[in-house]
Length: 170
Image (cartoon, rainbow, N blue to C red; front, side, top):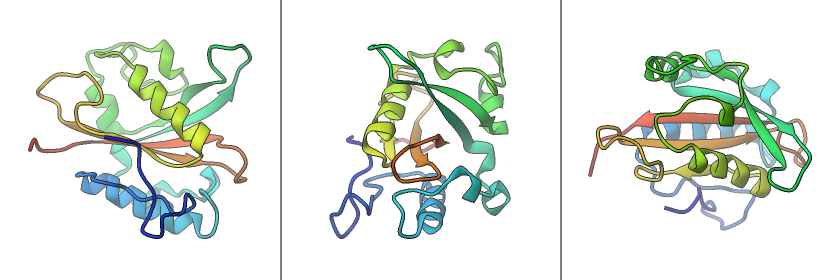
């Protein structure tokens, strides 16, 4: 499935969700849309986790840290990791990745799709979606992941809000 697409009016400033199944991701998307108003995306300071407390356990917030070199233009460190996500990492060290880089922690799968989705958010300054099957994880896990840009100005993404949810199989 392609990244989250354009909205009903077709403009890139009006992103749509496409065929997402997760009600939690839809809830975060609606909240993100309400916060951004006329902007391309809201700032991290606009987000109040208590406003979306029901989905906070399924959220992570990544700080975007610029780096030099040709291979990568940014690295992503965990500012926040919700309890459901931490519990899902209970067999990995560290279980709570807060304060660590996404590409420096253990994963039970290849994290390249996660990094690629973050890169798409930076390049396009719009949400991205990883559908069920986009991450090569256990057949017992049917997860969707949505990545939402955050930043104080529309010219630079400084954080990425991530929602991960288990969804039923087709």
